[in-house]
Length: 103
Image (cartoon, rainbow, N blue to C red):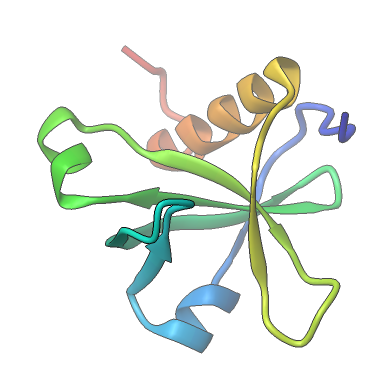
């Protein structure tokens, strides 16, 4: 589990600088799908990204990933831990509402 104590997320733009506003992800079965980069941020020293496909946009949903920068090119990792996912989800909401009261 990655420690992501709930502090204020710091906005980032590394993936957008490298790839533009969209990235193509390939699933394990080889299916490719484009996702829009909704937000990149650092929380507790770890970098995350919120991505949204066209299908997800209709439901106003996003997929959250951890960004692994251990190699030359960033890799996205699924967030397996429920507590980490919850902290990252709350941080993403904080970015959206930028300190305003959430509905």
